[in-house]
Each structure stands twice: as C-alpha cells, then as structure tokens.
Image 1: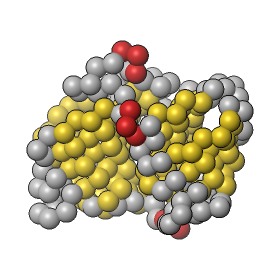
Image 2: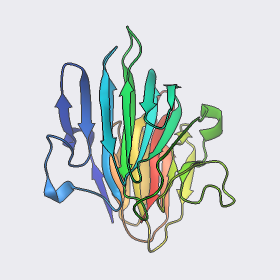
Image 3: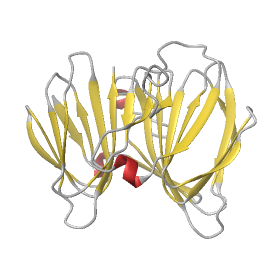
Image 4: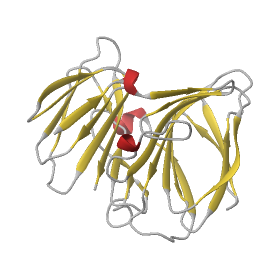
Length: 242
C-alpha cells in the first residue's frame, strides 16, 4: 500500500527566525494519528534565518539525521564537536544515554535549509556519538548509495553508521532515468521529494510527486522511481525502515 502525502498536507510552523514543515507530530503540531511511520518519529524541513539557531538542548535514545540542502549549518555538542556543515553534508547524531547540542546559521546573509529526521534506535542506551560526511552530487547521481545505514561497518563502508535497522539514501535522479527498489515483507519505505519531479509506481498504481510531497509505502512489491523534471534533476530522500 502506498499513501502519498502532499506538501500542502504538512504542518507549517513559522516563527521570526525559522520556518519549518512538519511531516509528523512535532512541537506545536499534535496529531496522534500521524505520530510516526515505522521507526520514523520526525521529519522536519527547516529554513533557518541568517545568524539564528537552536540553543543547546538535550536528547536521549534517538538517532537524529540531518541533511543540509542549501547554505551552511554550524553544529556544536558536548562531545567536543564544533564544525561547519556545507550543503550536501549528512550528519548522524546518536543521542544514546544523553547528548546536548546546538545548531545555528553562521551566515549574516543567506538562510540555510536542512532536513532533520528522528529515528528510534534498535535498542536504548547506546554510547552517544556524532559523525558527518559530505556526499557529492556525482556520488549520488542516478543510483542509491547509503548515506546512513545500520549495516555500516559490516562490509558497507559508504554510509555513516546509525544505531537503527535502516538504510537511508539521498539520490539525485536525472530526467528519464529510473531506479527500481525491490521490497521485502518486513520493510517499509519512506520517500520525500526535496526538489524536482518524480513518478513513483508500484502495485497500487503510478503517482506523480512534486517538491515537498512524500510517499509512505507498506507491502512487498517492487517500487519504480523515475525522474520527470522538465528542467534540472530530482533530489529525494529514500529510507528503508522496519
């Protein structure tokens, strides 16, 4: 079964310093019927104003993945990490037994857009950790390479390790090119279109996605994803989850 959630169906949270689109219940958006999809607890599409940010705050027992779409994001945490994350960078923060962090936009002129996703870990009480890596367009063009994976370090060296049974991809798909994803009985798929246009097909039919749309897929069937942008390419997030 596939359910398409359009960009307009997301919850908009707009403040002077940040605009966010919430795909699941979060902060001031409370919808018990939309609290999660599998192990995904949050998916927030954020646009952070210049010289603004999140003050230091704690988390525990969460796997938090951020992807910088445009601009530069500055990260600090109580593990001693302090770094600038340019566009194309993925960071994985395993909160485990407890971590405190802050994120801000260091630019005085340009906003930064970043997508943040929260996943439930496979088990609680991991040792906190943080990692990041920049993934170039060329690495991701017309193919699925993992940017984060629960199998990383077990023969899979491409993705950042994460304490969850997931595989996360951020492909860039040219117009007319197609990816095929074989599904298994015990997996769900979550797809979110960052930019461009996609055609997504499975046993339920064929669906056209526009920027900000997402698809939540359950059931064992092959998934066909085709780039259909009239100009440019399609960039999207694809997560295989329990």
